Length: 119
Image 1 (tube, rainbow, N blue to C red):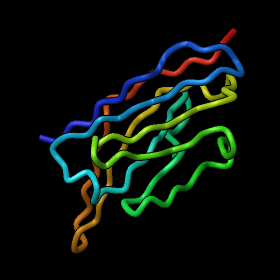
Image 2 (image 1 turned 180 degrees about the vertical axis):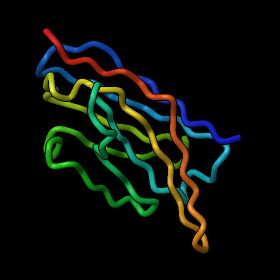
Image 3 (image 1 turned 45 degrees about the vertical axis):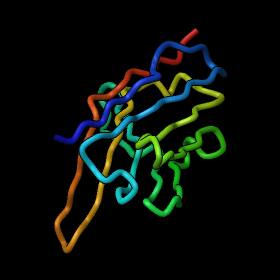
C-alpha cells in the first residue's frame, strides 16, 4: 500500500519559514518524480515545486527564490523549505509522487498539510 505522509505545516507570521516533509512508503522512492502542490480556498490545485528522480527541480514563478525542494532517497522523503512566507502562500500543501512506466501512469497523493501565513 502506497502512503505519502506530509508534516511540518502550521501557522507562521509573514516573513517566516516552514519546512514541509513528505515521507513515502510502498513505492521505490528513488524512481519517482516528486512534487509539492497547494490549494487555497476557492482556487485550483497548483504545482509549487517538483523534483525529478534524477534531482532536477522546477518551481512556480510565485515561489522562485523563496522555496527550495529537495529529496533524500535514503530516507524516502521529500522536503519543501519555505522562506519569506507571504499571506498568499496560505493553502493546503499536498505531496505527489508520479512515475510513467511503459505508458502506464502511477500517481499518488498525500492527505495534505495546512500552511497558514498570518500576523
